Amino acid sequence: MTPKLELHLHLEGAAPPSFIRGLSKEKHHDISGIFDADGGYKYKDFWDFLKVYEAATSVLTTPEDYHRLTLAVLEESAASGVIYSETFLSPDFCGGRDVGAWREYLHAIREAADQAERSFGITLRGIITCIRHFGPDKARETALCAAETAGDWIVGFGIAGDEKVLQPKDFLWSFDCAREAGLHLTAHAGEWSGPESVRAAMNDLGVERIGHGVRAIEDLALVDELAERGIVLEVCPGSNVALGIYPSFRKHPIGQLYDREVKVTVSTDDPPFFHTTMAREFEMLHEAFDWDDGVFAKLNRTALDAAFCDADTKSRIAKLLEG
Ligand code: ADE
Ligand code: ZN
Image (cartoon, rainbow, N blue to C red):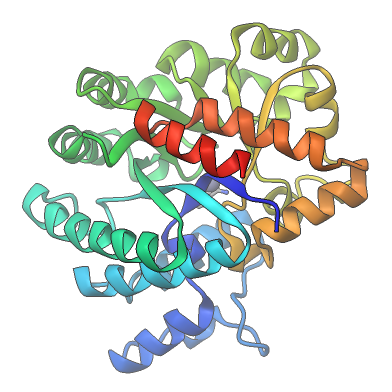
C-alpha cells in the first residue's frame, strides 16, 4: 500500500462510532440519539455535526479513555498506509483546560502513541487546538496548556470549530503565546467562509498552514498568493463532500489548486463521521483526477516538508517514504 502522511486529523473526530457507543454503555451515559440505524454517526449539517462531535466526546472522561482512543485511531490510520500523522488535541475536552489535568491526558496519549509506533509502525505528533465557538478566553487557557507542554511531541497550535463565529484576530493573544513557546501554527479557514477568511488567518495570525483553505479558489489572486508564499493547505476532500461544500470529488477544487501550484496535502479530518479513510481519499482522487503514484509521491513530499516535527523525525520518515 502507498505510504501516506496525514496532517489534519481530529483525535475525537477519528473515534470509531462502535468505540464511543461501547464507552457510553460502560459509563451508562445515554447518547444513543447521535447514532443512525446502521450504527454510524448521525448529523444534519456542519453545525449539527459540531454538536454530535461534542456529545460523542462527552463520554471520553479520563486519560485512560484517551489512551484506548489513541490506540484505536492509530490502528485504523496504519491500516490505510499512514506512516506519519499529526492530530489535533483539545485541552477543552481533556481536563477542561487545567494544565495539571491536561498533562495527565497528554501522558496517556503519548504512551498509546509509543505503543502504536512499536506495534503498527506509525509516528504521531500533536497539535493543540482551541475551539473558535468556545471564544477567546477559553482559547487563552488552551494556549497556556500548549505553551506548558510544547516540545518535540506537541509541535503545533491551531484553531478549529465554527468559522462563522468571531474573527481570527480575536485569537491573536493565543497564537502569539503559542508562537513564543516555539510552536508551529495552523488555522481552520476557507471551509465555511470564503477567501477573506483565509486572508485573515494567514495575515492576522501568521500561520504556516491552513486547515482546508479550499474556498481560496473563489479568488484567483489569493490562490496565486498562497502559491507564491508557499502556504500549505491541509485539504480534506472527503470531509468537504460529506458536509456538502462540494457535490463530488470531481467538482472539488483540490485539482485546480494543485494545477495552480498551491502546496496541497490530503487528510481525512474526522474519518468515521465522513465515511472515509486515507486509503479511500487517495482512491477517490485517483478516480476524479487520474492522479497517479507520481502525484501522490509529490503530495507526500509536500506533507513531509510541511510537517511540524523536528528534522530527525523528518529524515526518518523520508527514508520510509523512499522505501
Ligand atoms: N472540528 C472537527 N472537524 C472540524 C471541521 N471540519 N471544521 C471545523 N472544526 C472541526
Ligand atoms: Zn478539521
